Image (cartoon, rainbow, N blue to C red):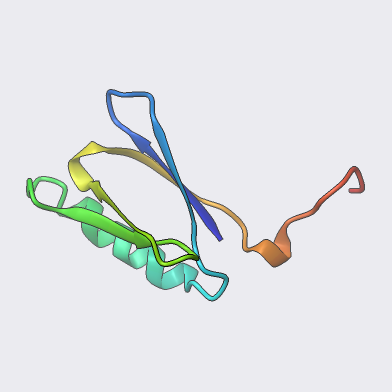
Length: 80
């Protein structure tokens, strides 16, 4: 599963490719909690990619979050 996070007032997008076994519901719950505490200057959304690299995004700077499909759900090629 991949996730894209927009960074406010910069136009940048952070893209993280999560592990195949990432729990979508648990991830959404974590995002909700962090965004709910965005008024707290120390709130950070931490994500771990499929290679173990950790990425932290300050909650106050998140403008949008986009969750992609799991790898198994992706279609490749021109077929519909």
